[in-house]
Length: 178
Image (cartoon, rainbow, N blue to C red):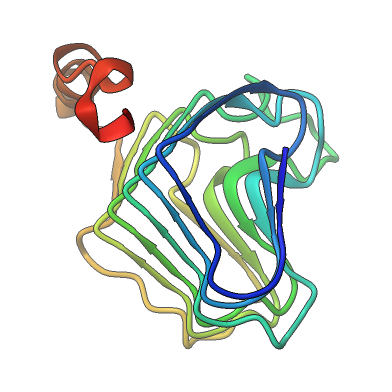
């Protein structure tokens, strides 16, 4: 896993896969995680995300943009556990942006989870397919906006969109990840 600390680090154009716990632990300010592929991560750990940050109220300005998260977490949510998610903002992680990402089968507890008292986080223009919940707010402040461009596809169109995104675009050979 990658451990990011400090200010202004960029992690871009990588593939993270077959990781039993988090792929990236994020600490600090103004970091960018973009154009990466995450798949088959957080396959063993509980109460964890492929990208994890939190427990420090001084962390601001981090962004996670234009990544794909596919097959994150265990297949089924186990009763009595917190589950897994693609992105987990734990207690106090605030003023962060999650924008333009693709989430497919992205966590037994949801694609994006934030715990109290996180606030001023933006989750916008993301696509969420075949995932239990797009967003899980556990006691988070009302100051974390969501937009109508965030989708949890549970209609008959999901199969068509899933085929288009996973098969037709061939994500792992796309220049976006090279």
